[in-house]
Amino acid sequence: MTEERKLKLPFFFIIGRPRSGTTLLRTLFDAHPNVAIPLESPLIKELGSKYSHIRSWDVKLLTEFYNDLLFQRLFKFWECDLLKLKSEILNCVGNYSFSDLIKLVYLNYPSYFDKTDIQLIGDKNPTFSTCPQTIFKLFPEAKYIHLTRDYRDNILSIMKVEFEAPYVSLIAYRWRYAAAQIEKLKIKYPEQFYTIKYEDLVAEPEKEMIKLCDYLKIEYVPSILEFYKVKEKLLEKYTVEELEKIHKSLFMPISNINVSGWKTKMRLNQLKQADLIAGKYAGLNGYNKAYSSFNVGIYLSVLPGIVYGWISHIGRVAIDQFPLKTRIRIQEKGSILAAIYWMFYNLFKHND
Image (cartoon, rainbow, N blue to C red; front, side, top):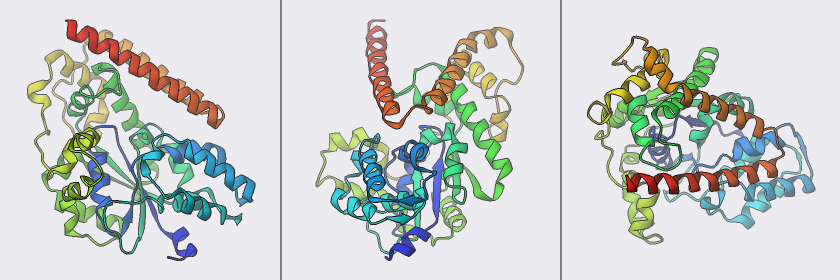
């Protein structure tokens, strides 16, 4: 592929809350022979704050870009050929945009699926669901697939994993916050946003993927639904235990077993909290609340989670103003603090 054609390839984003099926959808597109969509890494947002304004590049600036790229969270898991990647980046002396360099980086991701003629580049990062305006400014011509999931199932799913505090009010607030931010852009740029429900995707994957491929103007390839067969190739490099740590469900056919689990697994008080916080965004995303009336007692019980969620978002906005390397250090310390929190949480939970 010529450099000119690489830079003209269209770009799309999958945005949605963690545990909403974004990894499944990303894997389906990765299984498509004409799509390049790497594992997640928030490098677009992180590097964009420093380099998005640059239109003319020299070797020194390109080298700095490459070095910063290597320190981005999760990028090491891409397992790129770094010598090849560096060579391509350093060849971009002259007038190039930030999105041009990002496309070159993404095209260097070595997918485990066979690729033939790349026609489309994609990105999947759940963290972008809370700052879609930032991403839209960096890629204003891209298409955006908004994958949403019933907030009650989403809450229960997130409470099983150790990357967000296991409080219904906090998780529900973050679901609502992301829904509100995305809704603003969908209203303003309706042609660039396509909303799909997780429940529809797992119920009729072929039907929904045909529609998504049509939206992105690529041919639908039936074999993408057999993505789980790549496990055989991955077992040449990883153990079964290592693969299951990544995402056990990705090595099995698509199932809707986890749909509407909240109806039997969510406690009444949790359900009332979730419905209260989701508010109008439940209906806007196609979900019916079980409890619609306002309850002062429930509101007072969720208020601390709402306040904490709001403060944490303000804090993230403030951190984004720091220089790139300072942000990385703060994020690393935040990961350590989160690990310590979960260690004590699990300890006390076990003792109880």
